[in-house]
Length: 286
Image 1 (cartoon, rainbow, N blue to C red):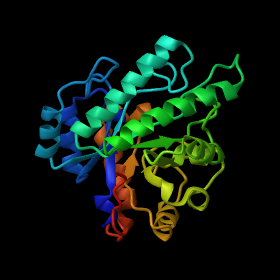
Image 2 (spheres, helix red, strand yellow):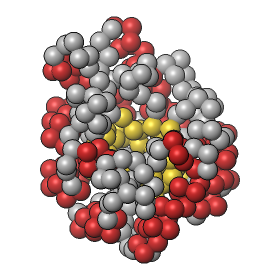
Image 3 (cartoon, rainbow, N blue to C red):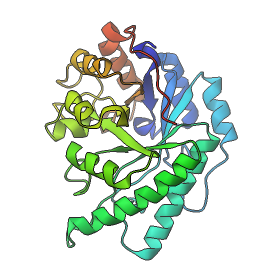
Image 4 (spheres, rainbow, N blue to C red):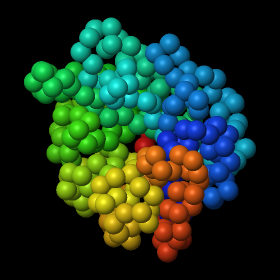
């Protein structure tokens, strides 16, 4: 499959537009996959339930877009923390992510994006780690039973003391030990940790099933062409390692909010020399 067919848009920088605007602009830019972030104005999801999925599927299909990942709002200061300590918050968080898994199943979406959550600075990080691993195991087993895969990204050190490096991602995957949890290689967090695409594959191999594919200086979540990364070198590493997943443009800079489709178009222009590159078959994660 060509790279152009493996690129997914994401609605994070479309937060001041409607969901229909997002799908319409993806279609205009020739992007046929989407990772759906669950902000309330696009897809409502909480511990009580989720909005009807039929109209969302119909809207995506009307614009020729396939949903490939559902990524719930999470992490500090969001109320849903995978390493929550308060019993009521643990209950709410478990229900919230269970609902995300079930909503993804209804949307025929094979992946749900997660992180490790975060721990308090006033407690040993290992205590938060244990809570995160327990929650992720329970949710990964739920996901696997529903044909959905949780894809876990590493975060920045300022966001969490838990999974913020490749080695910590490896350890969490090993401890959770469920086929329902795999790795999402976020190039922004990877670069911040001084890591490389090849090192991720050397460590995790086929457990890398998804990617947040972004430019940076060297870290960041920038449109391609706004940072210092070499997309050709990155893509060569993905090809060498037989990567079968998608490449989500998770563009987070506030400068993109007013005209988000221009950031997508800039990325595609920068990636133009590689868009017709055969990236090999797409491997389903579920």
